Length: 245
Image (cartoon, rainbow, N blue to C red; front, side, top):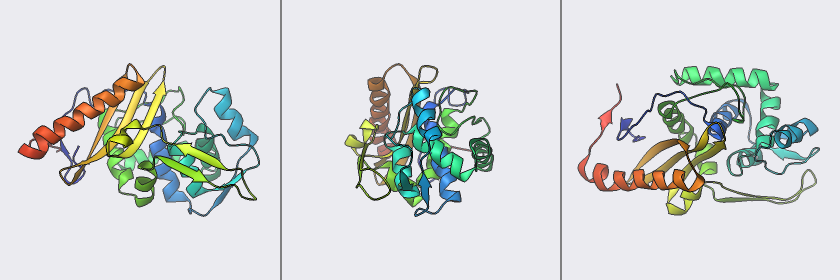
């Protein structure tokens, strides 16, 4: 999808409802940005840590008692895909996970995501679902937020030790950043497969794409690279595409 005019260059099964794993965290970041100040300080609880470790989820390596800013937690949420960061933010800005998820679904409706339902803030196996089309629309909205856009294109974030927390080094799980991409988020569960919401600049325009249910980590990035190569060769040079109604 061309973020400038909403033109869809290629789509396949784009309206099929499926789980999207940690792509869910894009909406978590989107809601937090509308609820919180970046300098707000959030205290990590034992429940935040246990939620991530008990579910076997990826974490930002947070410990109970640490106090971090929302700005730092957004990096912990998006780069290493920390379920502990997601839980901490949801608990603070729901307040409580249930109220936060309700805000996520309200935001989805406001964005016109008709085939999306969120059940938690981290994408762990649940009754939540979305579609490639809806996730592309969300990616477009998220990247219009300068803070989310900056976080999403960051390959590594170093948070120095302070009186309130340990030092942290968070690396993005998005290998596509090495190829000039500017975002956005990976996801994986056994139920969802390997997922990727990505954005890259080609021909002076930003394009977003979504890959859902791939068979391996390597395959999702290979598919995304093929799509971007196709955009460069066919769309940018010829101006092809289909405009959304």
